[in-house]
Length: 191
Image (cartoon, rainbow, N blue to C red; front, side, top):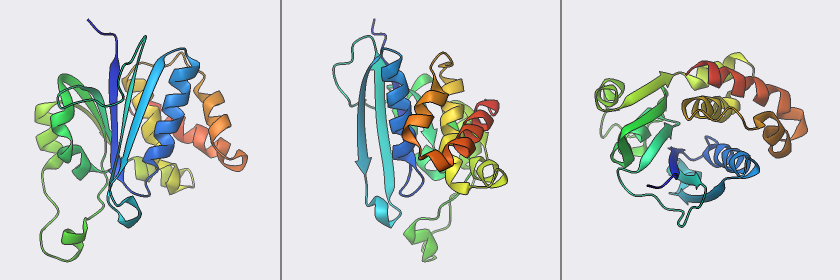
């Protein structure tokens, strides 16, 4: 049986999905794991979806995970959680940002934003739902929402024995280290 763990981060362009994935991958590598990361930018500059797959363990042979293989899905936007639900294992978990970014058809009034997403997901899989954007806003920088979600991910995957502070200090610009460390800590408190 494989010791490989699979994480899928999904969001919308501009939410910082890639930065969170880079911090996560670096921390896992520094802890001695073999890590493979694959990212897909679906018109991300125009608000399209962005997904990152991270696989880690003693030995990882491929960067891509298939449907039904994710141990954890982190959704930066709640409609993205619904879009990617088929990738989660039956005993997997989801960390969901209770946040809406209307797609172009929704913005144009062609379709409504789907209702009942969180309830539907909660019936299918173990979920941790919270308002990461509001947490980031309260500490003074809404752009740290991604790091709030990263903190929740680390707690949900039980990865506390990694020097996350050190990794954040290496990746984030010095002027933003303090607020990102606070965002990470608050994210951990949500799980």
